[in-house]
Structures are given as structure tokens and as C-alpha cells.
Length: 70
Image 1 (cartoon, rainbow, N blue to C red):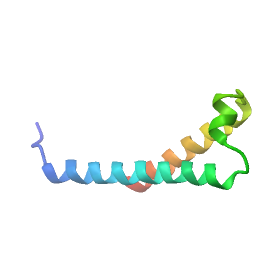
Image 2: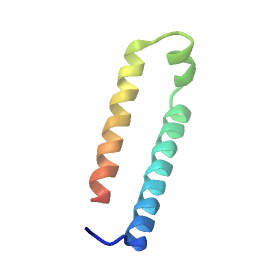
Image 3: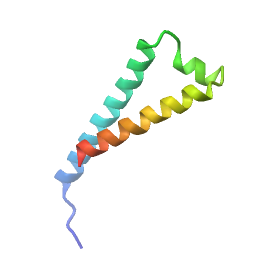
Image 4: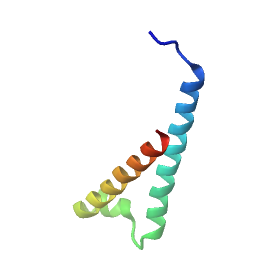
């Protein structure tokens, strides 16, 4: 059984926080750079194609952040 290392848990929380902050920054940046509201197009108008594109951006960003942490 391995010992519980507080420094590893702290660094994991720091990396997770940085990853989440980058994630939300990119989402806000996408919302600002587009000439329409992405949230409105997906939630109110039901634009499935835009939702798929946004989901692929989210997955790609998650993979990049995950790879940079490891």
C-alpha cells in the first residue's frame, strides 16, 4: 500500500484548476470571437451541428490539457 503524499494531491489540484481555467477561457473566447451567441444558437435554436463542433473543440481541448499534465 502506498503512502498518501499531500504534495502530489496539491499539484494535481493545481493542474486541474489551471486546466479548468484554460477551458473556460477558451469557451469565453469562442463566444466573443463569433458574430453570434453560441449559447443562444445551441440552447434556444437547437443548432445540432454547432453543438457537435463545440463538443469536438471541448474534447480536443481536454485531450491537450490532459497530455500536458502527464
